[in-house]
Length: 222
Length: 222
DNA sequence: CCTCGAATGATAACGGTGTTAACATACGAG
DNA sequence: CTCGTATGTTAACACCGTTATCATTCGAGG
Image 1 (cartoon, chains in turn brown, green, purple, red):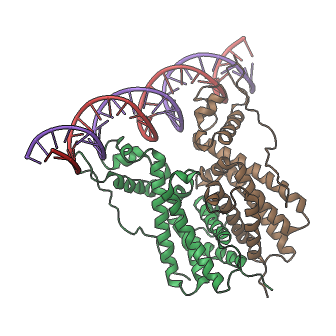
Image 2 (cartoon, protein in one colour):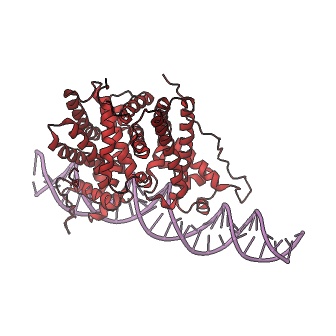
């Protein structure tokens, strides 16, 4: 039984309000992002609003427009932050299994699903509240790539050990990403509990699904 | 190469406007659902609004509240309709392969992803714009089960032929659902094109991913 | 056929949201 | 010290969800 570990945000971001009496805030953009993260984690995606974030900081409700072109820009920033947090969490989960690519692979899958269950609203923002055309946000694309590259690396490592067939790693990584992402999305969407399949242990489900996935990526059985 | 087939709505639903001069509409609930479907397919999820649906029918903007308790109820109706359409589409895709469970299984996966790419906004509504607590909407839960049961049946059929290991079919079906659902969600979210992985042929990707998946569900290679 | 309660639609209003324009203040380079 | 610019405020607009109140129509029972 692997150790359960809660994903934790690397550095605390204490949403500092505007100093009373001061006209300018100092770093409103960062503060707005912090407020948005608090809103999405505590109250859910629907509560994530430009005006609410401004109110939380004691600043006027139109102030955010000096730092974000529109609401979509804030959502993108929130998504990007979540993706980098996820990447860090995945790296930490994989670190103990550096020498065993198969275990590392499974640890990544379990951690991906665990992150989604611990931060469901944030997870949804990362993947649904963002434009399909992300060419306007290059750093967002980088953040996605940062997560995806962890899967690719794990698969390449498995290939070097002869544990995984030698197809295009990006294609295999897409299959892997699809599997863990789909499970995460179904869990977040409340599908899994309704299926009579383990009300509250997503890590175990993730381990099972990841194991089936890994077998599928194996070398052809001769 | 499997035949490409566009998912088509079984019966046309021609969003009939209110007869001019008439005070009552006749079947406003059904018409509102039709208008909502038009909006979500043509303009996307953001355009799906109670007031816009009412306007489309030439009816007052508060009229929907006589037939839907709130916006969530309309979203649930849209999601449910989409799920039943998806189930029909999956059945049609599987029908030609009744005798070959492995092919049937793959056809289901490809069709699932194809549906999502043809109706991306509707797909998103089916799985993201709906409350995680769906106990208040029993018919919605039925609609999900109607899709899920197709996967279970396909897996059981494979098990009877000795093509798939004899674990709990619901667990295996969850693994399968996760895989195709995850791929569909990533494609709809615009991730796949950015990965340099085939800009516009999701069916081919789905076939590859489904094949890896199927191997993973196989009997242990002795 | 008539009556009358119930079902359905219309109108108007409230608060919340994204967004913008016009104005006010503070910062920082020269 | 000065002044352009960045940053924050105020006020307003349009749109949305939602509700209360009023108007019209339907249909069951006499």
